[in-house]
Length: 312
Image (tube, rainbow, N blue to C red; front, top):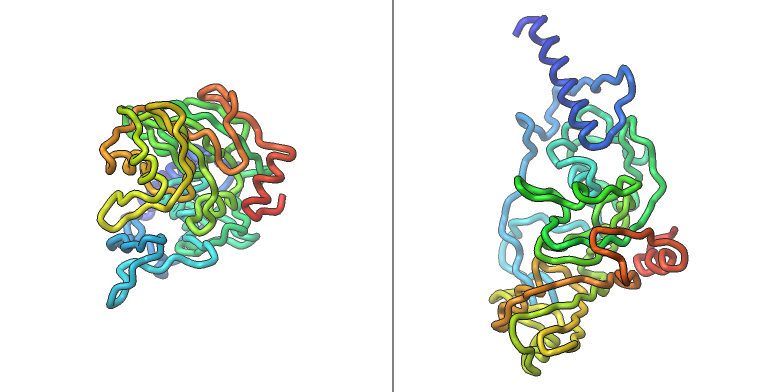
Protein backbone atom coordinates (compact mmCIF):
# COMPACT_ATOMS: atom_id res chain seq x y z
CA UNK A 1 0.00 0.00 0.00
CA UNK A 2 1.33 3.44 -0.92
CA UNK A 3 1.91 6.18 1.65
CA UNK A 4 -1.14 8.06 0.35
CA UNK A 5 -3.20 4.89 0.48
CA UNK A 6 -2.16 4.28 4.11
CA UNK A 7 -3.21 7.82 5.09
CA UNK A 8 -6.59 7.38 3.40
CA UNK A 9 -7.06 4.01 5.10
CA UNK A 10 -6.22 5.52 8.51
CA UNK A 11 -8.65 8.42 7.94
CA UNK A 12 -11.46 6.05 6.98
CA UNK A 13 -10.71 3.87 9.98
CA UNK A 14 -10.84 6.89 12.30
CA UNK A 15 -14.23 7.87 10.87
CA UNK A 16 -15.52 4.33 11.41
CA UNK A 17 -14.32 4.30 15.03
CA UNK A 18 -15.89 7.70 15.76
CA UNK A 19 -19.15 6.57 14.19
CA UNK A 20 -19.23 3.50 16.45
CA UNK A 21 -18.35 5.57 19.49
CA UNK A 22 -21.21 7.99 18.79
CA UNK A 23 -23.56 5.07 18.21
CA UNK A 24 -22.64 3.89 21.72
CA UNK A 25 -23.45 7.31 23.19
CA UNK A 26 -19.82 8.36 23.65
CA UNK A 27 -18.99 12.06 23.29
CA UNK A 28 -15.97 12.41 20.99
CA UNK A 29 -13.74 15.40 21.87
CA UNK A 30 -12.87 17.77 19.04
CA UNK A 31 -9.54 16.85 17.47
CA UNK A 32 -9.52 13.39 19.05
CA UNK A 33 -7.18 10.83 17.43
CA UNK A 34 -6.86 7.08 18.01
CA UNK A 35 -3.88 5.94 20.04
CA UNK A 36 -1.29 4.24 17.77
CA UNK A 37 -1.53 0.49 18.09
CA UNK A 38 1.43 -1.56 19.28
CA UNK A 39 2.84 -4.18 16.94
CA UNK A 40 3.05 -6.76 19.68
CA UNK A 41 0.40 -9.44 19.97
CA UNK A 42 -2.69 -7.87 21.53
CA UNK A 43 -4.93 -10.89 21.25
CA UNK A 44 -6.89 -9.44 18.30
CA UNK A 45 -6.62 -11.04 14.88
CA UNK A 46 -8.37 -9.38 11.96
CA UNK A 47 -10.82 -7.70 14.29
CA UNK A 48 -11.75 -10.90 16.07
CA UNK A 49 -11.09 -11.91 19.64
CA UNK A 50 -10.11 -15.46 20.59
CA UNK A 51 -13.11 -17.45 21.80
CA UNK A 52 -12.90 -20.17 24.45
CA UNK A 53 -15.29 -22.94 23.54
CA UNK A 54 -16.41 -25.92 25.53
CA UNK A 55 -19.36 -27.74 27.06
CA UNK A 56 -21.23 -26.22 29.97
CA UNK A 57 -20.26 -28.17 33.11
CA UNK A 58 -22.88 -30.52 34.55
CA UNK A 59 -24.32 -29.54 37.92
CA UNK A 60 -25.38 -31.40 41.04
CA UNK A 61 -28.75 -31.02 42.79
CA UNK A 62 -27.37 -28.17 44.90
CA UNK A 63 -26.14 -26.32 41.82
CA UNK A 64 -22.42 -27.11 42.28
CA UNK A 65 -20.46 -28.41 39.24
CA UNK A 66 -20.12 -32.18 38.86
CA UNK A 67 -16.51 -33.27 39.35
CA UNK A 68 -15.15 -35.08 36.30
CA UNK A 69 -11.81 -36.68 35.60
CA UNK A 70 -9.33 -34.66 33.59
CA UNK A 71 -9.09 -30.93 32.97
CA UNK A 72 -12.30 -28.92 32.70
CA UNK A 73 -12.96 -27.62 29.14
CA UNK A 74 -14.02 -24.23 30.57
CA UNK A 75 -11.83 -21.95 32.70
CA UNK A 76 -13.01 -21.59 36.30
CA UNK A 77 -14.99 -18.45 37.02
CA UNK A 78 -13.12 -15.95 39.14
CA UNK A 79 -14.20 -16.11 42.78
CA UNK A 80 -13.98 -12.32 43.18
CA UNK A 81 -16.32 -11.63 40.24
CA UNK A 82 -13.59 -10.43 37.85
CA UNK A 83 -14.51 -10.58 34.14
CA UNK A 84 -12.87 -9.49 30.91
CA UNK A 85 -13.34 -5.80 30.33
CA UNK A 86 -15.00 -6.27 26.93
CA UNK A 87 -17.65 -8.41 28.64
CA UNK A 88 -18.17 -5.76 31.32
CA UNK A 89 -18.60 -3.00 28.68
CA UNK A 90 -21.13 -5.22 26.92
CA UNK A 91 -23.04 -5.83 30.20
CA UNK A 92 -23.11 -2.09 30.84
CA UNK A 93 -24.66 -1.52 27.42
CA UNK A 94 -21.76 0.70 26.30
CA UNK A 95 -20.60 -1.41 23.35
CA UNK A 96 -20.61 -4.90 21.91
CA UNK A 97 -17.60 -7.04 22.79
CA UNK A 98 -16.08 -6.49 19.34
CA UNK A 99 -16.58 -2.73 19.57
CA UNK A 100 -15.18 -2.79 23.11
CA UNK A 101 -11.97 -4.43 21.86
CA UNK A 102 -11.62 -1.71 19.23
CA UNK A 103 -12.12 0.97 21.87
CA UNK A 104 -9.51 -0.73 24.07
CA UNK A 105 -7.04 -0.90 21.20
CA UNK A 106 -7.54 2.84 20.61
CA UNK A 107 -6.74 3.59 24.26
CA UNK A 108 -10.00 5.35 25.16
CA UNK A 109 -11.09 3.00 27.98
CA UNK A 110 -9.85 4.02 31.44
CA UNK A 111 -9.97 1.73 34.50
CA UNK A 112 -9.23 3.31 37.88
CA UNK A 113 -7.37 6.15 36.14
CA UNK A 114 -5.21 3.88 33.96
CA UNK A 115 -5.54 3.08 30.24
CA UNK A 116 -7.05 -0.41 29.96
CA UNK A 117 -5.74 -3.16 27.70
CA UNK A 118 -7.39 -5.90 25.68
CA UNK A 119 -8.00 -9.02 27.76
CA UNK A 120 -7.71 -7.14 31.05
CA UNK A 121 -10.00 -8.33 33.82
CA UNK A 122 -11.98 -5.94 35.98
CA UNK A 123 -13.79 -6.25 39.30
CA UNK A 124 -17.38 -5.11 39.97
CA UNK A 125 -15.91 -2.32 42.14
CA UNK A 126 -13.54 -0.95 39.45
CA UNK A 127 -14.31 2.50 38.03
CA UNK A 128 -14.56 2.42 34.22
CA UNK A 129 -14.53 5.64 32.17
CA UNK A 130 -14.54 6.30 28.44
CA UNK A 131 -12.53 9.19 26.97
CA UNK A 132 -14.98 12.00 26.19
CA UNK A 133 -17.80 10.47 28.21
CA UNK A 134 -18.81 12.22 31.39
CA UNK A 135 -19.04 10.16 34.57
CA UNK A 136 -22.64 9.86 35.68
CA UNK A 137 -24.08 9.58 39.15
CA UNK A 138 -25.55 6.11 39.76
CA UNK A 139 -29.30 5.93 39.24
CA UNK A 140 -31.73 3.05 39.69
CA UNK A 141 -35.13 2.52 38.07
CA UNK A 142 -37.92 -0.04 38.30
CA UNK A 143 -39.20 -0.70 34.76
CA UNK A 144 -42.33 -2.60 33.68
CA UNK A 145 -41.38 -4.46 30.48
CA UNK A 146 -44.27 -5.24 28.11
CA UNK A 147 -44.70 -8.56 26.28
CA UNK A 148 -43.15 -8.56 22.80
CA UNK A 149 -40.15 -6.42 23.75
CA UNK A 150 -36.72 -8.05 24.16
CA UNK A 151 -34.59 -6.94 27.08
CA UNK A 152 -31.46 -6.04 25.09
CA UNK A 153 -29.81 -6.83 21.75
CA UNK A 154 -32.82 -6.76 19.42
CA UNK A 155 -32.43 -8.75 16.21
CA UNK A 156 -34.00 -7.93 12.85
CA UNK A 157 -37.71 -7.29 13.26
CA UNK A 158 -37.47 -7.01 17.06
CA UNK A 159 -37.52 -4.06 19.47
CA UNK A 160 -35.67 -3.84 22.75
CA UNK A 161 -36.23 -1.66 25.81
CA UNK A 162 -34.04 1.21 24.62
CA UNK A 163 -35.94 1.39 21.34
CA UNK A 164 -39.33 1.83 22.98
CA UNK A 165 -38.53 3.71 26.20
CA UNK A 166 -36.50 6.88 26.66
CA UNK A 167 -34.74 7.07 30.02
CA UNK A 168 -33.31 10.28 31.47
CA UNK A 169 -29.97 8.52 32.05
CA UNK A 170 -27.75 6.04 30.19
CA UNK A 171 -28.94 2.89 31.98
CA UNK A 172 -28.92 -0.83 31.21
CA UNK A 173 -31.11 -3.74 32.38
CA UNK A 174 -29.87 -6.04 35.14
CA UNK A 175 -30.76 -9.56 34.04
CA UNK A 176 -33.38 -10.42 31.45
CA UNK A 177 -37.01 -11.25 30.89
CA UNK A 178 -37.77 -13.24 27.75
CA UNK A 179 -39.75 -11.68 24.91
CA UNK A 180 -43.00 -13.44 25.86
CA UNK A 181 -42.82 -12.33 29.51
CA UNK A 182 -43.57 -9.01 31.16
CA UNK A 183 -42.85 -7.28 34.43
CA UNK A 184 -40.17 -5.84 36.64
CA UNK A 185 -36.62 -5.15 35.49
CA UNK A 186 -34.04 -3.14 37.40
CA UNK A 187 -32.45 -0.50 35.14
CA UNK A 188 -29.25 1.21 36.31
CA UNK A 189 -25.86 2.60 35.29
CA UNK A 190 -24.22 1.04 38.36
CA UNK A 191 -22.17 -1.96 37.18
CA UNK A 192 -21.81 -3.26 40.73
CA UNK A 193 -25.46 -4.29 40.78
CA UNK A 194 -25.11 -6.87 37.97
CA UNK A 195 -22.82 -9.32 39.79
CA UNK A 196 -24.43 -8.80 43.19
CA UNK A 197 -27.98 -9.36 41.94
CA UNK A 198 -27.38 -12.14 39.41
CA UNK A 199 -24.77 -14.17 41.28
CA UNK A 200 -26.17 -17.71 41.89
CA UNK A 201 -24.43 -17.80 45.28
CA UNK A 202 -26.48 -14.90 46.67
CA UNK A 203 -29.99 -16.37 46.15
CA UNK A 204 -31.93 -13.09 45.93
CA UNK A 205 -35.73 -13.43 45.75
CA UNK A 206 -37.56 -12.76 42.48
CA UNK A 207 -41.32 -13.28 42.51
CA UNK A 208 -43.54 -14.13 39.52
CA UNK A 209 -47.24 -14.52 38.74
CA UNK A 210 -47.93 -17.30 36.23
CA UNK A 211 -51.05 -18.37 34.32
CA UNK A 212 -51.04 -21.92 32.89
CA UNK A 213 -53.20 -23.66 30.30
CA UNK A 214 -55.01 -26.10 32.59
CA UNK A 215 -56.18 -26.53 36.16
CA UNK A 216 -53.44 -26.59 38.77
CA UNK A 217 -53.25 -29.73 40.91
CA UNK A 218 -51.80 -30.32 44.39
CA UNK A 219 -49.25 -32.66 42.81
CA UNK A 220 -48.12 -29.90 40.43
CA UNK A 221 -47.67 -27.42 43.31
CA UNK A 222 -45.74 -29.98 45.39
CA UNK A 223 -43.34 -30.83 42.56
CA UNK A 224 -42.78 -27.16 41.69
CA UNK A 225 -42.10 -26.46 45.38
CA UNK A 226 -39.65 -29.34 45.86
CA UNK A 227 -37.72 -28.89 42.60
CA UNK A 228 -38.27 -30.01 39.01
CA UNK A 229 -35.83 -31.97 36.86
CA UNK A 230 -35.89 -29.85 33.70
CA UNK A 231 -33.09 -31.86 32.03
CA UNK A 232 -31.45 -35.17 33.00
CA UNK A 233 -28.72 -33.17 34.75
CA UNK A 234 -30.63 -30.09 35.96
CA UNK A 235 -32.82 -30.03 39.06
CA UNK A 236 -34.24 -26.69 40.17
CA UNK A 237 -33.93 -25.52 43.75
CA UNK A 238 -36.81 -25.91 46.23
CA UNK A 239 -38.93 -22.77 46.29
CA UNK A 240 -42.04 -21.09 47.64
CA UNK A 241 -45.25 -21.34 45.62
CA UNK A 242 -48.94 -20.58 46.21
CA UNK A 243 -52.07 -21.05 44.14
CA UNK A 244 -54.01 -17.86 43.32
CA UNK A 245 -56.85 -19.54 41.38
CA UNK A 246 -57.38 -22.68 39.27
CA UNK A 247 -54.99 -21.55 36.54
CA UNK A 248 -52.77 -19.01 38.34
CA UNK A 249 -49.94 -19.36 40.84
CA UNK A 250 -47.20 -17.17 42.32
CA UNK A 251 -43.67 -18.46 42.73
CA UNK A 252 -40.43 -17.16 44.27
CA UNK A 253 -37.16 -18.05 42.52
CA UNK A 254 -33.68 -17.62 43.94
CA UNK A 255 -31.88 -18.74 40.78
CA UNK A 256 -31.95 -17.53 37.21
CA UNK A 257 -31.88 -20.40 34.71
CA UNK A 258 -32.91 -19.53 31.16
CA UNK A 259 -36.74 -19.59 30.77
CA UNK A 260 -36.81 -21.55 34.03
CA UNK A 261 -40.49 -21.31 34.96
CA UNK A 262 -41.63 -22.22 31.45
CA UNK A 263 -39.28 -25.23 31.42
CA UNK A 264 -40.45 -26.33 34.89
CA UNK A 265 -44.09 -26.20 33.84
CA UNK A 266 -43.41 -28.01 30.56
CA UNK A 267 -41.60 -30.81 32.39
CA UNK A 268 -44.81 -31.37 34.41
CA UNK A 269 -47.12 -31.28 31.36
CA UNK A 270 -48.26 -27.64 31.62
CA UNK A 271 -47.83 -24.70 29.24
CA UNK A 272 -47.43 -21.09 30.38
CA UNK A 273 -50.02 -18.70 28.94
CA UNK A 274 -48.85 -15.61 30.81
CA UNK A 275 -45.82 -14.83 32.98
CA UNK A 276 -45.02 -11.62 34.81
CA UNK A 277 -42.39 -10.71 37.42
CA UNK A 278 -43.68 -8.31 40.07
CA UNK A 279 -40.93 -8.29 42.72
CA UNK A 280 -37.12 -8.30 42.87
CA UNK A 281 -35.98 -8.46 46.50
CA UNK A 282 -37.59 -5.46 48.23
CA UNK A 283 -38.48 -3.64 44.97
CA UNK A 284 -42.08 -4.19 43.86
CA UNK A 285 -43.80 -3.33 40.59
CA UNK A 286 -46.97 -2.07 42.27
CA UNK A 287 -49.30 -0.19 39.90
CA UNK A 288 -46.57 0.93 37.51
CA UNK A 289 -48.05 0.93 33.95
CA UNK A 290 -46.58 -1.25 31.22
CA UNK A 291 -43.68 0.43 29.43
CA UNK A 292 -43.18 2.95 32.26
CA UNK A 293 -40.50 3.32 34.91
CA UNK A 294 -40.04 4.96 38.29
CA UNK A 295 -36.90 5.88 40.19
CA UNK A 296 -35.84 3.71 43.11
CA UNK A 297 -34.81 6.11 45.86
CA UNK A 298 -35.00 6.92 49.55
CA UNK A 299 -35.57 4.09 52.02
CA UNK A 300 -36.33 1.63 49.20
CA UNK A 301 -32.94 2.31 47.58
CA UNK A 302 -31.04 2.11 50.87
CA UNK A 303 -32.61 -1.29 51.59
CA UNK A 304 -32.02 -2.52 48.02
CA UNK A 305 -28.31 -1.61 48.03
CA UNK A 306 -27.94 -2.92 51.57
CA UNK A 307 -29.31 -6.35 50.56
CA UNK A 308 -26.75 -6.37 47.73
CA UNK A 309 -23.94 -5.36 50.06
CA UNK A 310 -23.31 -2.09 48.20
CA UNK A 311 -22.53 1.12 50.07
CA UNK A 312 -24.53 4.02 48.63
